[in-house]
Image (tube, rainbow, N blue to C red; front, top):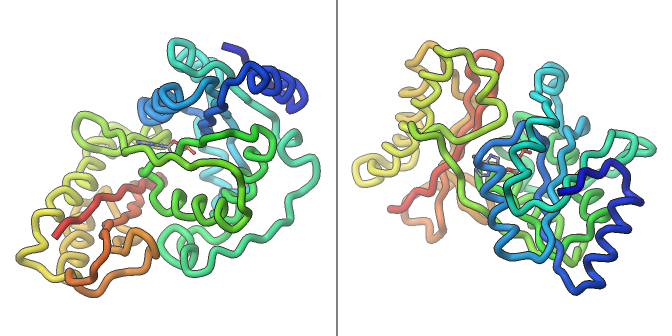
Length: 281
Ligand code: AMP
């Protein structure tokens, strides 16, 4: 496995791989890797001839400076985790390699970015679009792999690819969870022991909610989830919304003919956790 920090070196390697007839699979990450990231790499390995993972904590997508400063970084540990996988190259650039000058591009994702993460993290998706479009321009992957854990991010990236007509296939990958159900996240390692124990209530409540569509309407279920989580002294719900999986707009009734997803963000002390679950009715 090669570790590359510079664009010219990366592109020379990838040009060779393409000439050998290999397709390029790409997994963008911010490091602090866990089994969720590795599942994306695994899938990339099944569907591509050569797998590149990037590790780059993108400053432009952090609306909260404290969150950026706290974000865990350990390149050597990430390298050790990727070594036995199908990842063949790690691209770990410094910020000035990605942004030789400040990125002033403004993306417009309309209603997709007005809700949930977009509402509570102003500028976040603009930063995500900046870095992902820049990484796509550098790597020029045939396929790129993203986790459904960041459900709204996936919708934004699909929209960006569609709007910019980028020649890349976006492959969604299922959420990987800890054995107790908590969605894996790089931020989980920042939780104290007590916070970690209580955080399981987030996924447990989402799972329980999926069985309640017969007895509660959309509004009642929304309140039920928020109240149940907020009763816990360690947790504070920022939002919970049951949305149309395509438009991300809140649904009003179980009769809405669309795939429905319950999306949540919860503050656990200073740590912000997100999760989502498909809601069948
Ligand atoms: P991040 O390093 O948090 O920016 O995440 C990099 C990629 O890994 C994104 O596509 C995430 O959606 C994905 N990812 C993060 N956590 C999980 C998880 N628990 N299950 C599946 N994919 C994940």
